[in-house]
Length: 443
Image (cartoon, rainbow, N blue to C red; front, side, top):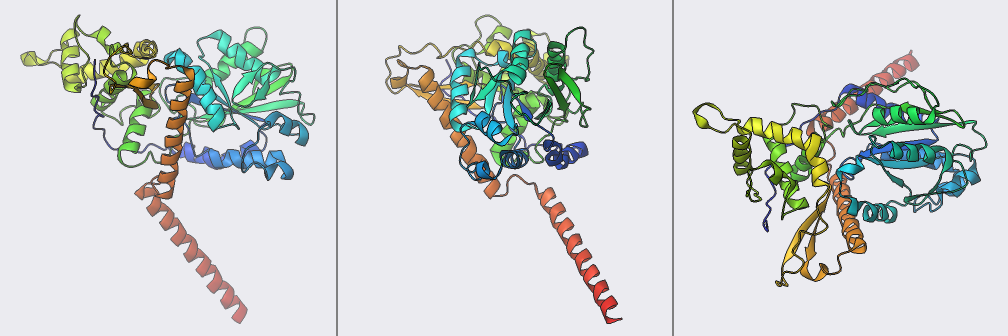
């Protein structure tokens, strides 16, 4: 049983923001004018890290414009009945946050998380799915054409989103999100479900980020009622942040292959992965299945990679374990199998009967939630306690994000210099125009 799980030393995050991401971000407000529903995809393992704050301003403005002047004045606080708002003002403006890969997080945390999101983000509808489960795709397809939206949850209703806007004979859906969260795979699955008969795969998919580089043509998702969709390029954050926050954010996104391969050394990814496995289950972390029988949990990445390399017979000349090869193998194993195995982590680590009243456990859900469970909380450790812990984590996340924005940590020094240069060029052009106008006036 690990009681002390130190945070690993992580490298500064790299910058990866290709030009097509900038182009789409600039186009987004225009695209939203012909959008009725936004499907924002996130990775269930990184429910907070995979939030793209670049979209928030454009989405907020979209809802204000769609809602109408009366409702707009109230949107600065909370809109508690989005469906009523859409009916009243004759425009659909729904935002559904879809958490993909639900089978890669512990089931015991999904409902508390859903309720925590409903309390903290009441203007969003949360949906969990896994695209390799056909039933999940069917449920999402039904949601788009036959379910009403309630705060933070999906509830069966008699209304139909695509039919509730009397001014639109069809509904347009825009899919947005970080790179490699499964947007193209989702749309292919929805087309296959919503259109009868054989349906050709409309979009190319890849395990590498950046496959989709431009807005797709309109794709038909359903024939009755008519539902169309656009696929969009995955958009990374222009700057991942400074210090430990930025370093951890970058490593998390690299682990889910959201950042271009090769921008990180694999040993750093393996070190963070080991840390997270230990947080999820400090008694019997999932990686123990890879090690020789009788092996104990460890927080030492070098000791772990040494043991794993020997177990896999990855030996260099002189009998030295090849830790680099072992790290690559470990990360790939997690992506292919280990995530699902770690999702079986128990609610508590099996020490609820310890007599030490000062004893606490570090627990986690996915890679974004981490909290302490006091000995006094262990006997009544239920969904309500977990929901409260998750809400506290969300509050901390929002406070840190606000602090980063206020301190200018969302913009790199390179971006600051670029903006200053553009501002200087703009001022020079304005002066040149003013001098030219003055000369014409004198003549």
